[in-house]
Length: 467
Ligand code: SF4
Image (cartoon, rainbow, N blue to C red):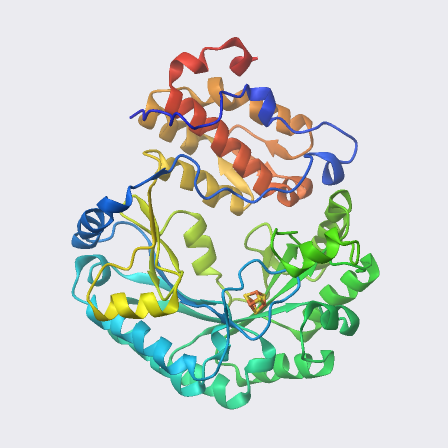
């Protein structure tokens, strides 16, 4: 089950490179900085001349395991200060043609096994800003999804968007066509911060819209809040979380601000015009938010998502992190299928043309690690704040004939000493600090295991790896 490490791969790193810093305040000090989970651990690019042939094989087989679908709407009205996902500026006439291409693609492939065979548990309209579409176009897109994808009877259908675009008529059209979850990017309720982020809706109008959506009682209503924004004090953050709790939403995400390159925020920060919160202070924001959620008795569905009541399930996000197949529709959408990760062409005109010509919708294609099921098991488990050590040991033994305790026991023990997890004879449970650093822990464990599983037991025998 081994695969050869690419020549260009980084050099072997000893286990100590994956350790956390041991200090009295792990929330602040455990790692030097927050890292994104690199989605490409163990992946190999497929040469472009092979894309069509590989895609034909992917599309010809039924999906295995859990499945979700992602529909991308790559338009934004403005470029929000912190965002690295802005692709195309919105103009109203663009919506109709874009939805035509989406619907045509859904219809075109409806009989191919990859699309037709196996229930789909969750659908996510993301972007960009899907709520920029007109009520009519939104309804057309959701209806096409319901007609041409084999949705499970309890399928979660999420519409992501911004409050300023979601008037009552549009919300009604979305619910009537089948949307049962709405995710609004709020970021903050603070008027001053909202203006600086490029958000146009006032605090009052925002709260009123959320209350109206809840009164309609037709979908789970969830929002996200960001901590670490420039000039955001702990008191402002606390007020944001308290406001979200008081509204009585179904779900709430609490995210740390990521200073992504090529964002207006990164440009403003390097010009000295704005200063995001220092990384070592972010843990205190997370701890305060998590404490308020616990006090309000909301359930933590993952390290950064809480639910209130029973309507919210957060299915799409949890299944995708756990390695579900994900069918991608729209320009610049990412998917996973049959052991491959793929991205559709990002150019809107090229996307529409390819749909029309019956060509594969591939703009990038990577073969996942031969160990992707094992790696996804770890990602999905740590996302939920725990890891079944016995189940992981069985998978490592089956995949590579290796003893988990021998190759990763020292890492788990060090993380426990660093205050990031607790353990019993079966489970590793992330502490509050471990949940804050969950992404770094996941990335470190994936990279360490990928290195061992790819390069083999010879490396696992190195004394440094077993110290
Ligand atoms: S936050 Fe959303 S609306 Fe703002 S630029 Fe990013 S994708 Fe567009």
